Amino acid sequence: MALAKSLERLLAEKAERVGQKPHLKPLTAGWERIVGIVAEDVPARYCLMFSGGAVTCTAWQEPVHLEVRGRASDLAMLFGGDELAYQYARQQVSTKGRIGDRLKLEALIRLSS
Image (cartoon, rainbow, N blue to C red; front, side, top):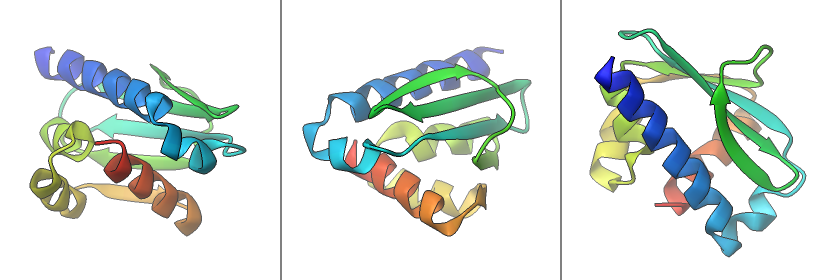
């Protein structure tokens, strides 16, 4: 359960960082999406909600536009901010959704580190 709380805290921090970066405003402006984050090895499901140019971390909501699924440790590496860890984690998690949404999420993750 500690890993689930750690992942939740990390996602909230990532949402805050994305919101604070002025150079990311053009990417988030007009992007109304719910990104579902599913940790398969712990009972943890979260959402990153992109709405009105802001992003928040919330409890799971249906439907999601994009789903990122993997082990909690891999998800933590993906959203953690370290480039080498990100490259490894990206190969370990699965992402389902439109290609444009997947590319935008990847850009936001990498540019907010």
